[in-house]
Length: 72
Figure 1: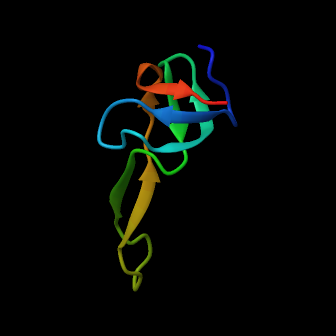
Figure 2 (figure 1 turned 90 degrees about the horizontal axis):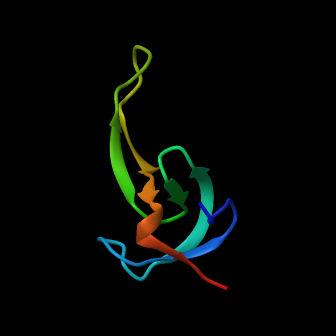
Figure 3 (figure 1 turned 180 degrees about the vertical axis):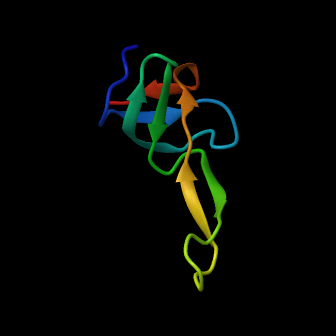
């Protein structure tokens, strides 16, 4: 895998096609990377303690390496 952490990349396919960002984390065993601001899902979180409210959190999900390209 030629893409590493802190590389600037552009998304080639999918719902975020054309977006750019930097690699936050590389997962070489799965050939995936996490790119900041790309492939973000809203995850519902249950309250942990009594009296707390549940929340909706934005979570960056991994994207396959074949769907991104390194930029200069």
